[in-house]
Image 1 (spheres, one colour):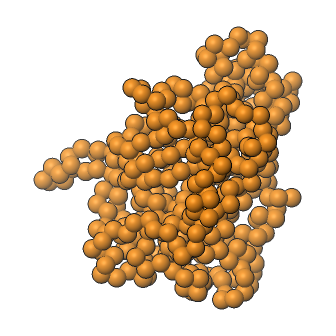
Image 2 (cartoon, one colour):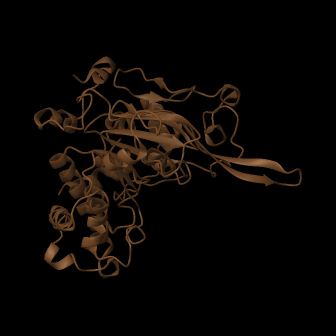
Image 3 (cartoon, rainbow, N blue to C red):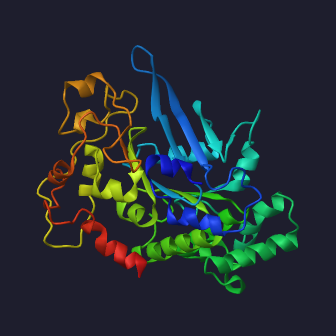
Length: 387
């Protein structure tokens, strides 16, 4: 049981352990030890056609050969700057975009129309919640009709679908008697996002991909939705892929974290290792950029300067080298691969010259050596979220 964690020396996520106490899901093919998702060498390049005087073909390498696993009952966060490929990764997993190459394996079966699990069956077990809560809902449908639409298309009777919609509204904290007959424009942003979560749950999925699903909400509403997501995960045994640019939110909700830069994963590992013992200079810079409520912390210089390189023509070797304070000749000549850190926690970093703790602290102008504040920037926000 949980062989992957034992071989790496990891402790399974507590939510994954709870799956052992639940009634077995008839759709579960491999048991708790079987990863829910396995992604292998996934690529998506967007052809922009021929540009320039010489008519050279331009290609944006949005996602460029990434691979990772998601265990059942686990929440994996994906973080990175805008344009790094986070949302594209979510759409590729849902097959809203067709991958150029690579494999997606869902509970032991490859997603394929020829063999394995079909895209239609995949979408019955994996749903996505998007950032724009208003654009995600049909303005001509009532809230109840929006939630009941998927089950009705799947063959459920109208009466059953409406009953399910009412039950899901209660589950996400909305009164069906009050909200069922309303339209999207009559709800607040937080209420609309709760409706989107209910609609995603209407098909009984096992996996939710949450793409910046709380970033457009006020902080108080954001905390309520995050706590709702945690409660739903415990009650329904869900697995989450949580995409966000907010590192405090990712720290609060995730078991493991993937850090993306320019279409590639540069660091991954348990949330505590990423936030307390980061190995990659880019991750250290992201952590340094988090806002703090502590007036004693002052940022004297920007943690990261410059813009990401053009994804049409990325740098040779390490793609972060043009912004990295530790870059050397090897970084331009050789692309670093994800390699294990010194510990056995499953912490991986793609850096030729990974940081130790003291170096990571020096790259973070907000933190002081030995003060134990590697997570202090987020402490205020985390405590409010848990309240």
